[in-house]
Length: 178
Image 1: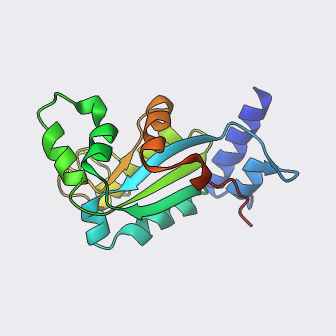
Image 2: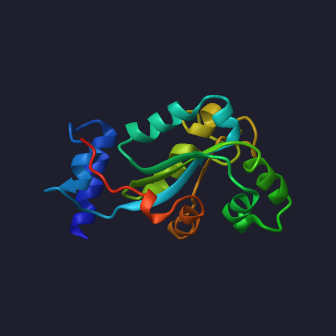
């Protein structure tokens, strides 16, 4: 518990700009990772890839001190799209969402950091771009609720299910930022 509190305190200082410490310093001590590091799946949807927004979105993730442990540009299959959105199966928008995701290239990433699921979900903003706050990825770039630029796992449980859809274990790196 004490370690978690220390990581959270240092992380808040980094976020607030009150410390010269980097997220790297928070997560690595003596050459080994410490703290509660989570992984989540994030992917940039076809409309954002086509609009050339990948670099700006990746930059936002990295500037926040999060680690990208894996990344690949790919054309998802229909089966992969169905698996990612399995939680929405039976809903009115399921079929069009699956078709959209399988319609073009995506940039899939595994992002790591403390409380990364909640942190990334806050960074990307509300699913509906009309409700997304300015400064969030969707608030700044999205125009449509279904074509809303980016996907991020909504829980650690779902991240654990979603990551293997696009990544094999040997494609996920464990490295130290310098």
